[in-house]
Image 1: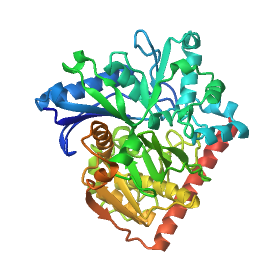
Image 2 (image 1 turned 45 degrees about the horizontal axis):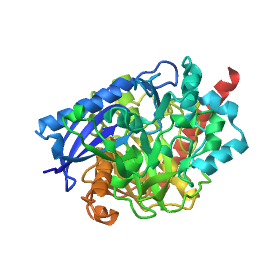
Image 3 (image 1 turned 120 degrees about the vertical axis):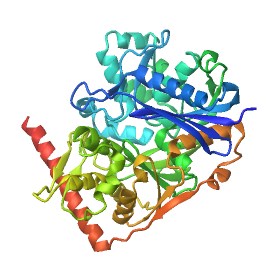
Length: 501
């Protein structure tokens, strides 16, 4: 009898397979990391074969370790790093170039070349997004422009584009299915979030043939079945969602006004706005939170490029720690106002600045500064950047009084207490912090009838710990003013450097 749901969580630095019971309890998790490639300054790539093979390997391993057969798996749900762009040959399934990762900034100059008030407004009105290298469309354009004969092959209908979900679905179904869901489509710069379809005017603007694009489905839908050769028998794929939207679902933020913030490679604060696609006046993004039974729920989102990736740099780049998990013990005695600020704009600044040219900096160093101070500044940078997003949402008339947090950094009590302090808001950490994989397990369960409604899912959410602010308003405002001063120095410095070149 089928009794498990298998979640595939394909992230920026690793792939994971998580086996859930019907009542959403984790049976087991298997994770594999894979290399990051940086061919040029500001470029970030993945080998598509690394993505696929780590997904297949983790799935097979988690099933084998728990003696679970394909027949015992009710359905698969897929969640993925968003915006990361792949283009492959429809006949062979082979990519024509590496996956260009969401962090990649190679199309910054192209964005500036085509930027105009008219085009920027058109893009914002149709997609809820900004014209920025972050999103998929300019990455597709770069591949078609820079791979030999790619544009001709695309016009001949020989090439397929997909975000990671589509690429995995294609290969899991042995090339039979080319689909995505509305959340991933909404991050491409090509999808009209109001009409819920690929936008022909934007396809023309970026010169991308419609034939390259996947069919757009609800987030819970019959996406297809895995090829029998992969797991020994076919398994239905019943859910797909971008990682941040999946986390929103896993955090049970189903009511308008509820918000979550995920601290993975980057940080993404998302607030449910219900059936209204609200337009931000503070450079936040309007996006599809999820689409169920043809009904769209929207969200406002702020995107930060460097969160866990900052700690990865502390560990692997500076070698100040052996493991990121060691950071909490190291900083426990560091005063909050130690004077050092780390601005982690290694790949530019995301919301609300959207400065592709900004680069990282450590400011305020003195002879008293040591490793623990720099590590504390790295952890605090995540809180300060979240504060930036909170202030932007306040400017749009939105301010959640409670923020639900998840992701690897959410396990750090020191960082979460600082987050509550700098936000001046309650921070809730769930019993299960890996809410991304839980979100698509929920979606797969909705599609297969295991769960009856989102209301039922909301009752299943459990709080592990709640962090309340203890910092005075004056101290909070003083620290944040110093952070903003550092941001101004970084953006002004880099813009001046750019002008001098």
